[in-house]
Length: 597
Image 1 (cartoon, one colour):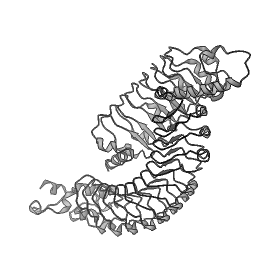
Image 2 (cartoon, rainbow, N blue to C red; image 1 turned 135 degrees about the vertical axis):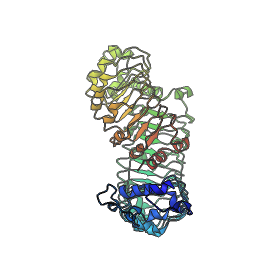
Image 3 (cartoon, one colour; image 1 turned 120 degrees about the horizontal axis):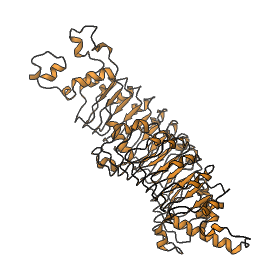
Image 4 (tube, rainbow, N blue to C red; image 1 turned 180 degrees about the horizontal axis):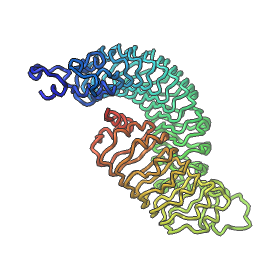
């Protein structure tokens, strides 16, 4: 009876009447929604949407029946149209045509329900910006949805869609389209008219080809076509000039597509049927930093691989490479990870492969040196540091290495060899350094990449003077905080801090707006501030695995720039492990659904 009193209903028989479906939504929630314009009914076990939700802005509220003084604080007549309706994670099997009674909606979230169809009246919600329909049982999409001219995001993953309406090309303002995990065998050519698209996910379908018109999507940054039945990729995709990430894993491709996309940074083409890598295909990948070609049938690696000067990671695991590797691989200035396990390589011992990228590249550089010594004229003098440092690397690769020495300090001879050489990369990892080598400051005008991992550093204040740094690796040290001056590193894109002693997210990192990658796994971080992380507009990778996070703030889901978020190994209870295991998109979607309205 008390809940009816709270609602202001004075009917004394109300508690004895058969409850109506509307009772599933507390009256106070509807009352608040009239003021805020937002209603969150997620996770309430609803099998249908109560009628009073549809009629929220039409029916006169109960307060109007009462003798309310116009000077009161509860001004029911000043209600706001409902703009945000969250109905995710219920048991809805039907959505009424009365959804048209909420024409001011900008966000409609129906993901994780049991919907097998949608009303045509959805097309009347002309203010709609986001329509979330993932994880339902939809086998088709009403054509009327294609008339939502203001729609920015349409997510339909994990449904039973076999076709997409030809009129989908009319959604001219759409920036995100997710059709993954459906039963699609083809796409209409009209998708090429979605000129505002930036993110397209088509993975886990049955596509055997892609329409040529995709090449007209000049603003798409991410295209995911993994887990389909593609045998080739149309050459027209070269027109996707903004493309940065291309996923083609688990298809039936026999050759790498020739895509001269100037912004293409990451190509994932593992688990296909690639046999040959040709010079023309590689020369197109002028900006690629990550090239994944694992689990194919590649037989050889051409010398042209050395043209990929920006390459940082090359994965050739489980291929058929038996010929010797081109020594020019070792000249790639940014290559940090080279994976070759599972190839029948001749001339390279298995234990050398097991030692990792550093030793393998060192071996290949040695081969270049041997070839050079066979034809080189004798030099007049030898540098005193020749036994300590690879002078060839300093002069040719602008790389200064003194790693894996277990040394407590770096000898002056190492720095002497680098004088006037404009060194850009330093590797002093796997030593016993307890203080930052002071002579590193001599390289401040050119140094962009520094690796001081696997040492015993507890402080790194001097690193703040290296203003050209773009990449810092300080993993496996004894750091508990970062100096506040680090916020002045205005070019920093990546910082690796795994296996240190941080108990909180370093304050300085919130202020480095250029950051793209933050690795903080295996520390004791107890929390993060999502409102400040949201200001890092370029942040795409955040590793917080194996820390002490007791909870994950729902607002973290609003960090939409994140492409990879690692949270496993923390003591929080929600999101559940099953959701975390689904990956970044699923976690962010879950967190957004938990944001209080």
